[in-house]
Image 1 (spheres, rainbow, N blue to C red):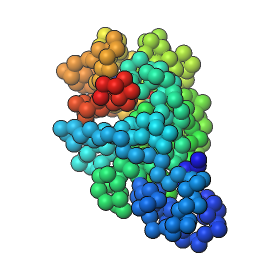
Image 2: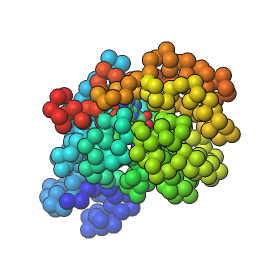
Image 3: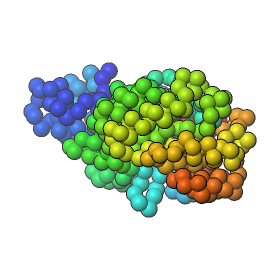
Image 4: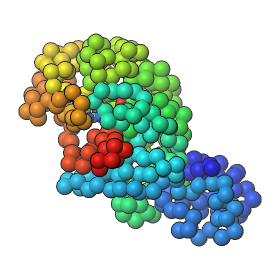
Length: 341
Ligand code: SAH
């Protein structure tokens, strides 16, 4: 079966050339509004024809957890019964949707629950678009846009699903659809250097975020297997190239792990690494997922950030939302698969 949301409006015009022209736009609108066939005004004969070949709504809401702070965590079921996560964060400056790019992940980062069962499969561009449609429709009128920002910080490594993510960027920024401004999209990668260079050429005005999590390669290798392939210096060089092409500030994510990457020595090394680079550091407290890694205390985390600021490094401690509902990457899915949710 093919998925209709995988196609741009122009592609739908071609696929549906046998029907009246406005039908393609009607289907495109239904995709954006998160509707299935029975919720559209399409003629029954057309629905019957399309249904045998195409899925209109590839995702259903399987479960929603609502946090005390208003954060909503969605477990979504794909048409092949795979589960993915998505988080809706209520914020004063506009709501943010945090979405997945893969079912599972093969990057193997020690602190991250998404990767515990490896990679199951990539999400298609349409499945990623429909994630947004379905969560959007659940948070207001389906004909309105009920969010401002999108962050690709859910399960999966976006640059390990490069072509589909780039096609999704085309769909989500389409003025006929959600028309999300590139500036309101953040893509987080564990640092696939070759893809950073490739992506730089596309000149998207999105915010590129890098999961750094260590200040030297040896420590990074202990928590992120990708560090065996690319060094921190190679990442920094690629980011300089990216910034030279896009003139956009990059963001480092730095998850504090007790006695691993949270010393004042690390503060100094971070300030050296980022010297002269147009960047910001988002410091995060580890959300422990049952492994051997422990979180740095809130107090120590504030001290870490203050020291960075004293050395002239732009850094903030990211407010953590939804801790009471398995807010971190892949936790809810992992629990559900184990039968504990
Ligand atoms: N694969 C991409 C995007 C997904 S992870 C990447 O590596 O960037 C996005 C971010 O989620 C990571 O940078 C990390 O900061 C955060 N994260 C994952 N597991 C976490 C945990 N247990 N506690 C805190 N943050 C976590």
